[in-house]
Image (cartoon, rainbow, N blue to C red):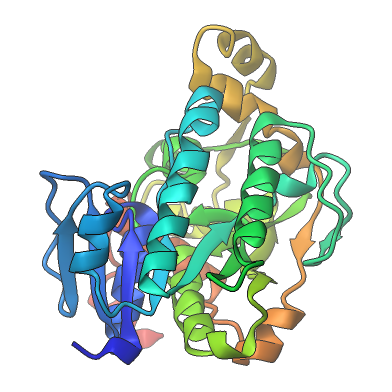
Length: 334
């Protein structure tokens, strides 16, 4: 095993975890993908699956001996209760394991930390003033991670990004926005003219690889911002309309019907359904314009990996089997 280029990905069967496994493997790394006991991963060249509990530090450290990078892609389910109970424990498991391995710990972050008062441009040193449950948990997790690096036993980096899309199910795209695309309708959670950041997961995963390759240039604890695509709801609607025309779900030039998210209903339903309560807390993200400043990231790795927005939307919907590939003739004409 080439110990200089071995990565252990915790939670490698999740959407980001599997995107990271693919990206590291394609870049020539030996990839060890942790999955829960009894689970199996798909056959991916260069990826070895480890069916071990993430809290079993001794077994994982033995199986992953030689790994120089650990990517923490573990996530609780999307409820306040699960995040309070599980997120800190999962982070502690990742910290312990990385310390035993002597590996750099990498973790995806998000914009929850900044809260409703966030400014339009988010830098790594922007004040973290979240009042919501998940935002406060995220702040505490980053503080814990930074504290763990103070004695020299750990190096860590958080790469913050916007809303995920691509690489499978479980995002706003398939659960709300485009689920009725074949019927000529989309659902948008906020004003159509508000621009917010989106992270196409294959691009974010390739960014993790590039940062891992340059990790020796970073401080013991580092935060970096992945800009991704800062786009409005209208840009999303236009991209989805183009796909709907291509699929024959709309006449050429026809308009999609745009429904709004029933936020007041979600708040009421959240009293009984924890997942909806967690979603309702995040409403402000859809009506507050913001973007991530990636200058520090680009200074480290060069140009940020970025698939053209329309191409990323198309591939994301193809991965979800919501649209089919374009006809060969159309592809050849491009």
